[in-house]
Length: 114
View 1 (tube, rainbow, N blue to C red):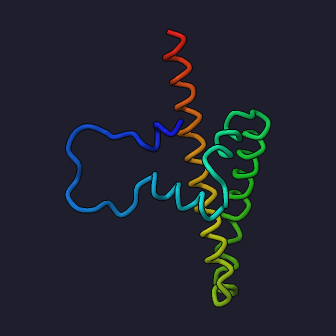
View 2 (view 1 turned 135 degrees about the horizontal axis):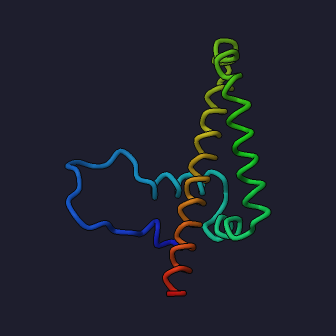
View 3 (view 1 turned 90 degrees about the horizontal axis):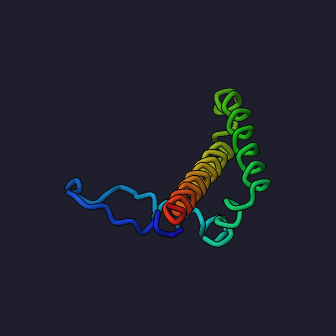
């Protein structure tokens, strides 16, 4: 399933060095979370784990969306809000990685069954 990360698109690319690529962000997030590719693939294959992960992510972002503006001025000096936004970005990047991996598995299964 690493095909999604190592895919080399054909065609012309924009000039200059990209700010960030999906692969770089995912590898950095995996390093920060101390997870590897196999662990995230295992979560993607497990239906119950997948649902728990999605429900946790959805409730996490929904509940914190309302509280961010209220607490931003009070806790910004301590770095609490910065840490929370970094954690949310890592979680969303992990979710994107899992979705891309899961879609790759579905496409591969469909292609094999043809």
